[in-house]
Length: 173
Image (cartoon, rainbow, N blue to C red; front, side):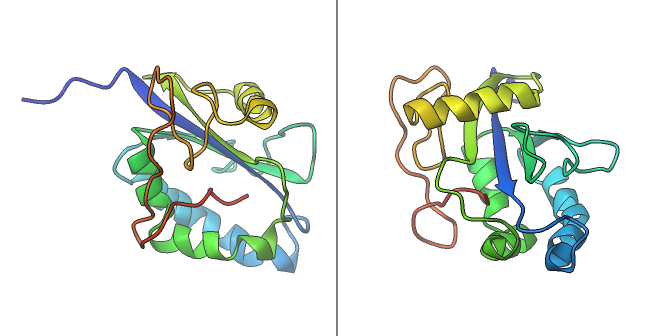
């Protein structure tokens, strides 16, 4: 007997400010890793959907009106599935090198929120959630892995744990 589908799925967006143009030698390793890492994500347990253009990724999708920003947006079964993908294999390697390719930005660049199962968020929706997080901090409307909320929650969940040990960190950005 199969379990009924969950009524909600987890949307995430991660925005990063490039240190150089995508076709520069500085970003070659990052660009070369996009397709393999996306293929791992696509086949990961709990993966539902990711934003992509005709290029197969979303590096050419405009976000927040800034041509130096790139966006990664996806939907997952839950925070556990997202965290498991983030901290394993090739993605973990890229995460460790993010400062080589992206500027360090003090304001929030990553946000999570619950969507009804089957909903595919838009970039405008992601921008609104990110700006809400920046203005109000983590709430059930817009939160982070450090302060997750379950669907319909009144308060944050306990801090998730990085499978490698220790508290989970924010996705790249």
